[in-house]
Image (cartoon, rainbow, N blue to C red):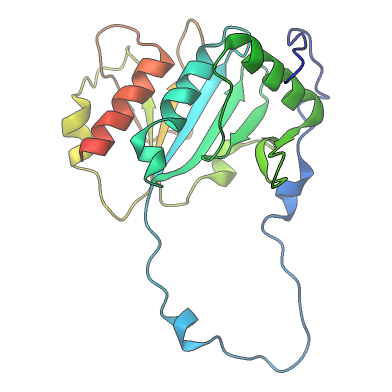
Length: 222
């Protein structure tokens, strides 16, 4: 059982603390000798399946709204079908967190607060059995983890582009990853500079949990 800690007042050294294992994700070893061509089976690999990525911006961990949004995404049939390729949370203080799609989060606010506090102190949370990292603090900016050709969509009720989500996702290209950027704060709006398009799905402000649920349902029907 996770021991809850006080989240308010945690210290990050200029947002430079992060799980440094992510720096080795793209590394490789060089072996000297005669180059050997890959087997035929490796030369004709099928094209990887496209998927969906969520970025929850300006998350207020103390409020708990981000916990409900995360559960809405992780519990969705979209994730269970293997179409969720990435899930990131950036806090109000600029701390960037990666959440693996296979993560099972606590269902109560008290345990969720404790888990987030533990994450901010240890920089990563591992599976007790497999020791695989399920949550980790990573280095900004989030754009370095997003597919190059992905279409990035931001959500804001103040956007003049009011759409029906079901109709909007129907026109998505099947060979392109989609990134949904949703605000997870109590009040205000997001204005990330890496978004390609800003849309509104309602004339009224929606919670992050409601917004992500609408997105998931629309994609599942598609």
